[in-house]
Image (tube, rainbow, N blue to C red):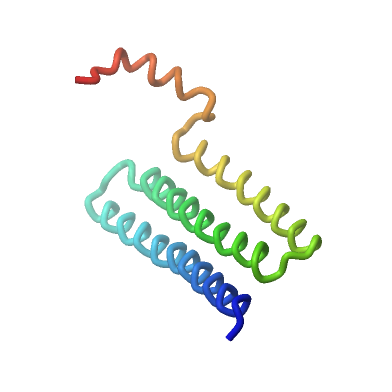
Amino acid sequence: MTYEQTVGDIAKVVEAVGVAILVVGAAGAFALYFRELTRRASDAYSKLRQNLGRVILLGLEVLIIGDIVRTIVVDPTLESVAVLGAIVLIRIVLSFSLEAEIDGMWPWNRWRRQSSAGPVDEA
C-alpha cells in the first residue's frame, strides 16, 4: 500500500466521521425536540434549530478536514485545488449563516449584546 492510498483511506474515514456526526447529531437533535414537545416546552422549535445548526457546523468542519487532506496529499492537481476552494468557500458561507442563525445576530454585532449585559466579573 502506498502513502497516497493510506492517506486517501484516512481521508475517507474522516469524511465518514463527518457524515456520522451529521446523521447521529440530527437524530439526537430530533430526539431532544420530541422530548421537549412531550413536556410542552414553548421553545422546543428554537432549541431544535439551534441544535441542528450546531450539528451541521461541526459536521461541515470535519468534512472540510477530509477534503483538505484528500486534495493536498492524494490528488494535488490545479483542478482539485480549485474544486476544494469552491467547496471551502461554500461551506464558509454556510457556516457563517448558520452561526448567525444560532446566535440570532451577525458576528460583528456580538459586542452590543456583551456590552448591554454589563461588566464581566473576571474574579
